[in-house]
Length: 94
Image (cartoon, rainbow, N blue to C red; front, side, top):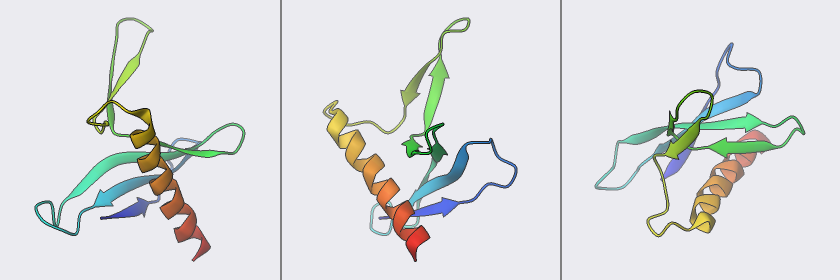
């Protein structure tokens, strides 16, 4: 499994890039999971968002992430986000 970064031309101001997770082994070999984004906060930190769907009524919006921990553990989500950020930093250092 690896991550590929896709630069966006004329994207939103704080969007750093999009990311895709590519699968190299069966049963998902040759497939990719899209919809990850790397954003720059107003403080300059880069963070990752998962593919999600917005829901709610009026001005109140919540997001349902499509990629979630099977056990509901936030540490597992953080581990994946940290992996994507690490791969991004390594790709920029190369």
